[in-house]
Length: 387
Image 1 (cartoon, rainbow, N blue to C red):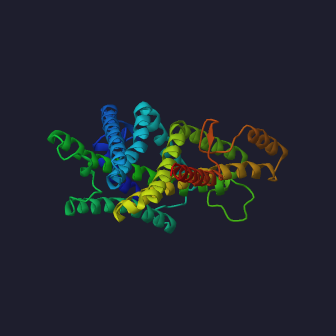
Image 2: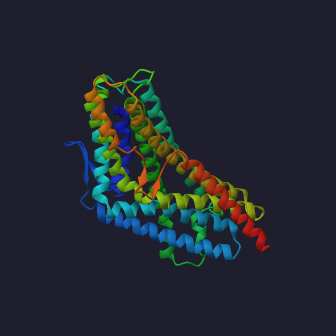
Image 3: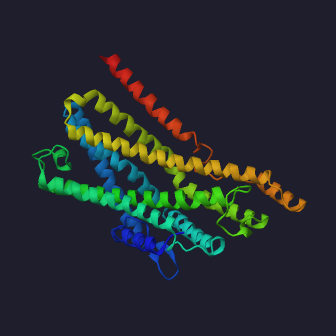
């Protein structure tokens, strides 16, 4: 459940994204849902094409600088290209599945309102100390990115000849029109990065501190600690209704996020491995600022994806524990036990997945780290063999 202060902050922070057409809908105060924007699809296509141009430019320049052994410029071109790949797939997905994305968001916020009204009628998020701490954490993460963006542009103005700036990717004799067009891309990339940070923080807040704790602690029977939701929730009829609602909601989320799970893990894994390999191999020919840029970028990618894998892993784990607790719970009557037994057999644990191809479990984090280590080792062996 979101406090009024966080709802107000979210609306204010999302306003620039809505005005510039980076999100596919606007908030309807009358109905309390997100509705499609009139020209959202055209604006989304504009941002998608803009990102595609930027990624292509970054890849071409990275190849050129790598062949000419200009490793400082190669690093910034590589970071620019990889920074555009992740939002590019997100924009393609929102453009193609615009109505589904809006439907998923509306389903989530309607479910949260239902949770507050039915399961936690006496809970006031505006007075809760835990809610206050979570709101402060959300604000700190979001505004830290804004502060870093301001610091970066101060650095751009103060040190215009630094090799770690976007403008140095252009040839010195480039036409003025190209300079202007490419010069606008950093502003666009910063705005897209802000959208990614905003969506990541909001998803982490909703799933990490509301949905997963609700599934883990309120629907699981036989816990020794006290419950915060009403006791009627743990009656057979309410358990069946609530768990099926959560399951259907997660299926809708998987219909959207499932398409980008495998590409995102592939891109982030390659970024981390290649960044570490570049620093290890060419670190003596790179400036300290370039090493810090590349190292920081790889750490951010690894941390972000490990956090997502952890959330998905705990969601799957607690989904299994819920069904297991129902099996060994002592129900009041044989009829209730029969009803729950038949329902439990028709259920699958709630999880984050892409069909049956890719399912996030708790071991997924260790597998991801193992893949990073294996990929880096193979690159080092290959480089050593070439010498």
